[in-house]
Amino acid sequence: MKAKARNTRLDGRRADEIRPVVITPDFVRTAAGSCLIEMGDTRVICTASIEEGVPPWRAGSGEGWVTAEYGMLPASTGRRKSRPGLKPDSRGLEIQRLIGRALRGVVRFERLGEHTITLDCDVLQADGGTRTAAITGAYVALVRAVQLGQAEGRFVRGALREEVAAVSVGVVKGRAVLDLCYAEDVSADVDLNVAMTRSGKFVELQGTGEGAPFDEKQLHAMLHLAKKGCTMLFRAQRSALRIK
Image 1: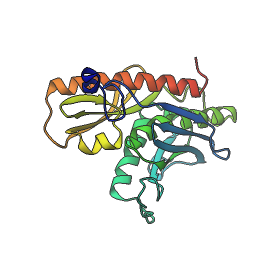
Image 2: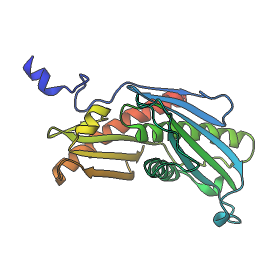
Image 3: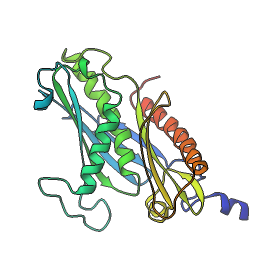
């Protein structure tokens, strides 16, 4: 019994275990692509919209663009969060840039023509890992939008190179753990967000030694867990998209 207590976390998971994942595709009927992603008690709606044209600096290139926006609904954290004004707050801006970079890492822009795909990620309920859940869900919405664009003749086939997903890892009480819930996140010595492709390449590593610096051994342990977690998320994405 004592051994079990040492090996489990606040919610009973093992160190290498992600929270239950449910991805519901086509959640928003009016969007070009969409899904609801649930990771434990974190829930994010991801939608994709296709528009003619690209940012001015890209006009005339013949290439498309993918961008993202992120926001948290007022009651998503329990205590009401004020709605942002016309511009997102600094945290929201940083997260939506992360989401955009992660998704652009797997896009062949020349096959989109001069179209912009905007990915909107809205957090319904937050319990840690909202940015990584948003990346994982946004990819599903992006796939659906690309499929629609291809069917309509606006996109050339093969606009996406491969899957991308993201997960959080960290060091909590001296131990590397996968997919931090909020209670673990706020007490973690190290917090690391990892976005990677299905072929095992990293798109982004975003980490901080918040409670204490971390060494190379701890970094390798966290990356090992992140790869394991993303492998599970790729399966969830493919299942949602009905890809074998």
